[in-house]
Image (tube, rainbow, N blue to C red; front, top):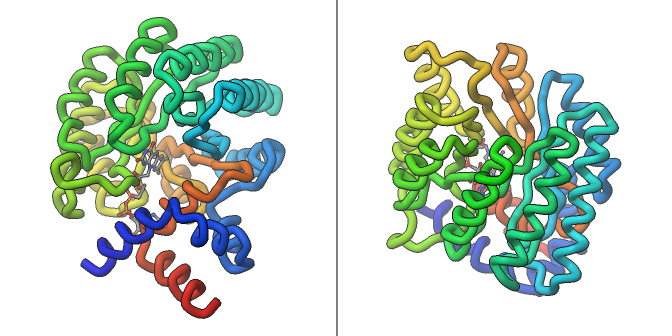
Length: 308
Ligand SMILES: Cc1cc2nc3c(=O)[nH]c(=O)nc-3n(C[C@H](O)[C@H](O)[C@H](O)COP(=O)(O)OP(=O)(O)OC[C@H]3O[C@@H](n4cnc5c(N)ncnc54)[C@H](O)[C@@H]3O)c2cc1C
């Protein structure tokens, strides 16, 4: 109860300038940031990806940034992301990135975001890479899914998206994406959403996650089961084992810096494990969501705020 209150509180203040300034300037939060963010530059992300590869872990790189407000900023995000795909290929890594449509101009116009993403997908196709369209707050769900589906018709092997188990609409969306043969990453959902849009109780979100995981493993195209929750990891392993679903047909995903030992252990057991590696200087909104996910992280930040 307290944890869920704190979580909504942290997500609600995430946009407040004074909190952002404090977290940006504080040495303590800087240390915490480096746990979740690989570094400021693409080179730091590539170095992290190479270190992870040595432990048998695959990666998807996320250039931090969201909600850009001008076409020029969106264009520059496309160029930077295209360069990231090419640099991954040159470095001998599988070119795989995760992108938010609001970074490519979704707040300006759907067509701008669509066209920018199409251009990025053409680069992905030229290096045999893959772009995962991240899912943002519920104001963007419909437009994100419709852009993702339109692009998937043109470049079906190079684009996938994300389904959030907490949304009431997700059962229908999963069936639609299974029918279309589109790759789905399943997550619990990281944004503060109201009860008419999303489940609120952790137990109900877990049940939805298991139900959607089972559908995706049974009939989905190379689904990604993205969770650090040990019970959900076990449920996924158990379901795949019971139905004889080969490990090569799906993968686990986790975030950089979260449950590192479990990441390595699952890869060593022969499960596909991809790590989401964020990098860049615009880390604040991503960091705020990671803090809100875990009572220990929240307590740490609240302590810093009180004792500053
Ligand atoms: C690869 C990947 C991509 C994602 N993409 C999206 C997306 O596009 N859209 C979206 O809404 N959400 C996304 N998420 C976030 C997701 O929605 C959840 O908010 C997040 O994964 C936490 O949920 P959980 O399933 O790990 O379970 P939880 O119950 O939150 O966590 C289970 C356990 O994992 C550990 N843990 C989890 N989070 C943290 C943390 N921040 N710090 C330290 N320990 C932690 C703790 O031990 C915790 O007890 C993504 C997550 C992953 C792994």
